[in-house]
Length: 308
Length: 250
Ligand SMILES: Nc1ncnc2c1ncn2[C@@H]1O[C@H](COP(=O)(O)OP(=O)(O)OP(=O)(O)O)[C@@H](O)[C@H]1O
Ligand SMILES: [Mg+2]
Image 1 (cartoon, helix red, strand yellow):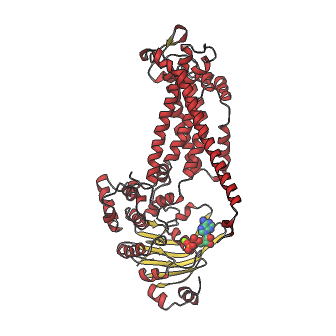
Image 2 (spheres, protein in one colour):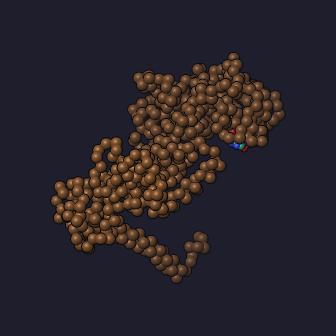
Image 3 (cartoon, chains in turn orange, red):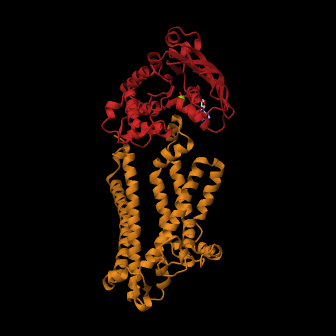
């Protein structure tokens, strides 16, 4: 018999009540968060659904976005978002992973200690500042390279890549760092070179962390609005297919919502179409996240020793 | 015949001298056991033989380790090639988080010593030699982590012999295993010694006595005594050795 078990019934009642209170507070917090998210989504649906009911799908996915003439083709916006994002991914992912590998595997430790916080600070630069920089510095540069205007999809991609890089670098470096030393030793002891060890053992072992790093980085890029609004030229047309594609002005879905939301009459078709674009954006993000968590999930079950 | 000849070898972690002027032979196709109390430098010595200590910054080696007459610390030695010739098995089984097949195929793949058809053959041979083939032949694509610790350690042995090394270093290869798995590893070492030169670190004196042909006793970074295992255990020359193996010290 321990003395703790012999506390009086009064004390026990108080303790039970305290448990009850804490448990339910936590539950309330959890449930209300879910509820709020659900409400936001319902609101988005309620405002946006008319888009898909009132505008024939054929027209919705056509190439002309002229709300003044009641032409609501969102294809240019989709293509614009796609171009800017793909461009950003093509720039940011290889660059970010390379820097992370350099920092995690090759850089002397004093340099890593110095650079890592610095890179994390970069993530804190407000996007409007980056947009401004892009507009003042990048755009003239790109125009000098021979584009008809400096405000292009590529300019947006550069800015977005820059915004995604700190996240990608920082989280990938953490993921590489978490790979046990025993794996590296095992590979080196067989006679693998340092690069072979990284490529064939460390990177695959860190895969789930690397995927998360890329997703978080790209996630920031897809949802980004202000900087993109400033530097992509805001022309709602579909760039001609080809290599020059990236060097034409485009307009993204997010920029469209931000730029036009202030001017529309509440309840109008234009208004609900902007929400409709929001729904599509949401679905795209959701799809990307599901794919990512599946990739990570496969890795997870492998760690636990399941089938490959 | 000596596979490796260690001459006046010292090793430093920064200013700390972990190995002091060692001299000993490693006999070809024999098992050499290294015993001694914790922290006496057994692992450091083992990791000097394939220059794994090079991966730790601030370390330095003095003296010579002649393998087939060539000093492995000469500036013109290719460390990557050296490690292929001198394989290593670690204290804790460390398979890669990959399939059983990929683990064994890792070495041949990075060294591109095998075409794809040969690869299957090499993997099978290596697993057979490591006495693991019958356990895993129907699940080569399973994760290596699905194996129990004893099997994982034998997988690591298979992974090491897949690149056909000349020497195999084992750092307390059975210390993380149960008695049955331990006996299997010892059995395996005896079989492997026919083709390979083996150096094994062990805390377990019975194991050293059971399995090895030669034994070196380390104490505070020095090699106190070295000799034929049966002699060293039955008739130690130094008092320190005797008190250690009879359990009075260490
Ligand atoms: N990376 C390192 N940096 C600095 N000192 C080290 C390092 N590794 C080992 N040492 C020191 O070198 C000495 C020998 O260590 P080593 O690991 O070789 O001993 P060991 O005989 O293998 O011990 P154990 O039986 O516990 O494995 C110890 O004093 C240890 O503290
Ligand atoms: Mg040790």
